[in-house]
Image (cartoon, rainbow, N blue to C red; front, side):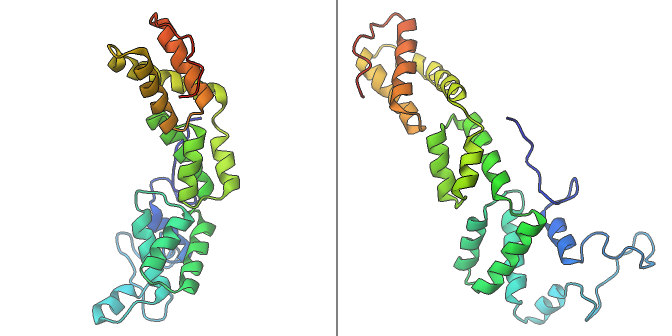
Length: 227
């Protein structure tokens, strides 16, 4: 299930800015064949299609909404993948016009800087391995980030019931020692409640906790009842 999350559409070692610049036609390689000597960069001239952001900013003129949207998205994506909805919400909060936001978001999707499917897959892997979250909790989290339901189903499909139960057992084993000295019912509530908060179903939680307590010699009759 391990996968390496990289910026889709970008060369190895390139960040979101270089991928977006290449897509806009003024990134690395845009000047190939221009006869420029090594070690020198050509400056975009007025009207040559290059970025005129520095000159406009220096004159204190307002940026074009599309440029503003692009700069905001690049800053937010630097080092942290985000969903299309997260970026759209950020642009709306900064009062970027809808038309400009849509243009930039669609372009970023085209070049792979926005990839909700890759985001969802990486999120499931990270949150299940790192926090032990079950599918139900992962679905809730991805919904809040605006990922499409079909993409969520595909991402959580990485996990099966057997893997979830194995993770639940590991969580209980780590917590079990801290509950020693408590009465049986308190141990049950504490351990099963921990699993429930991480999205595990009641049936699985009770079964895993009961088996862990039995292994320690606890009497578990009646522990199949809902907690």
